[in-house]
Length: 334
Ligand code: AHG
Ligand code: MN
Ligand code: MN
Image 1 (cartoon, rainbow, N blue to C red):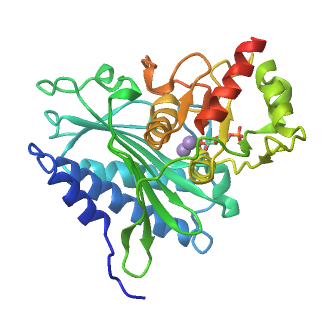
Image 2: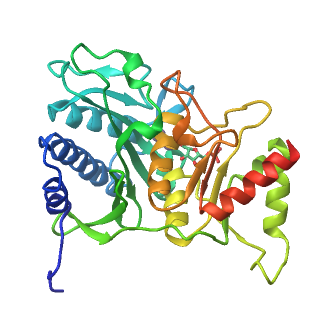
């Protein structure tokens, strides 16, 4: 196959940066680090069945979840590459209780939030998993960073993206100027532009949620699912149920095909399961930039001011028409 017209991630970032007069190059350094981290994790994921890297670590993270070996490998890898790139003052990770402040980078203006490996329960069964990241700029970089500096609204994100280790490996990201997708060419080991200016369909015919939890869902969500499953020619129902159990993979499919992903709060867990800073916000920024919507049921995800690094939020995300419709149900029955 001819390589005519091939645009690598590196080239794409250089071209984008040329559009900004005051670009310092910090951004491309951070992206190079993230890209390297993803290639390393991708390598580990691809050979996971062959080496002793599957299974439980035997430890728990701060959220009380059992860590998989690959969770820890991915966490260590991304923290290391981000520490070494010299542009990041702090890293927030799902797998770390506290923010990690990077020595020698106290005056750097960016911090990065990561879910090093999303979809842990899919690791051992060779289903799609990924890495989620968000880049934020500190309000004031004249002093050593503190945890409070890392608690900004999602609307303050400078960039957000995810690497998907699926049948092929992809990077989807936004800097607030649309969403672009890159696919890793295994032979070149380069991410190449494959999905330019992604737009999520306004409507869709897929609903994604863990239906096993139905009895705990708010009445509005239960009624909305019932509506999705009813037969109606005019609206193309019943809709298809699709749930992989990896936020990244579920949202990625809906981003390309149209659909809604829901992880609601319940009476026992009013904030649901997903983490605001490195799951909900990242996906919300991407989906909004693609023309979709992301809401907690109470407010726009990107407007929530976090008070804790690991706080959770209910999530309704996807095609705008579908999210609005689900929210109508939620309000009607609450
Ligand atoms: P993680 O593997 O980073 O802990 O995230 C798992 C999350 C998310 O990827 C997915 O959408 C959700 O857990 C699935 O939860 P259920 O198993 O409760 O459906
Ligand atoms: Mn996750
Ligand atoms: Mn994770």
